[in-house]
Image (cartoon, rainbow, N blue to C red; front, top):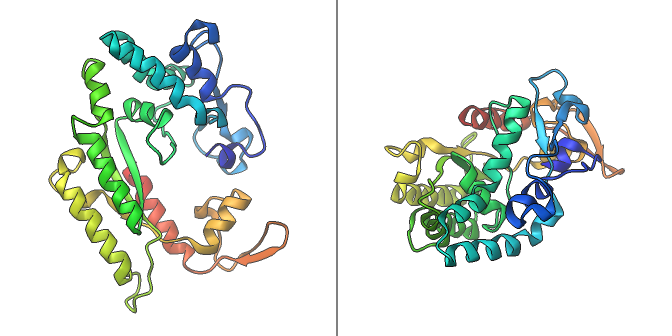
Length: 280
């Protein structure tokens, strides 16, 4: 998200810098002292005519962040210090709420690693709801099952630490986004048989853990099916053009040599993304 929205610009202050004082102590700075949000329209022309959108930069330093976080968290939990444990787990929430007040932000969207560790853990503690992307393949279905277990089972690490921090809330699931859904069937805009099998398995898991969903009475309402985006996705990512702005039959040169054309399927992708946006 940082690369797409901020392009070549590299912010001086990142989310890692903002978290350090709250996780490792005042030796790493004063929490909330620096402005950490950057106005996206300054670096991305597609945002110039819209409502103010601000960006907090990610950082490669987050790869080493879990060891620091969990070292501190283990100390707090071993000492049965609920206040310290809650402060650590709510560090990202504190950063986001502080910055949101400064810029008068009404909504915050957090992009996380697909792996549950460190900053992703803090994101789960910071947000009200989750949007979970799931590819139509075996490993992704297994990962979805594990995600549901982490969110709901008291013996799993997430819930254990929430309890030791005084009983922190569990985020709800707002949407399950099935990605790479193929349309090779002869019925227009209908997923092929392999995709349908994985979608059905994901639905079965959602029904098993329906209590985790905003739509607990019918978790199927939380499902959004999206395609593989083909050349539209490659063009969008490389040229930093939102898929909603791509024009059918338009040509684009990516990687300095490959000339790709936007085909008619982009209109379907645009509808899918618009529906997903309506659920956020």
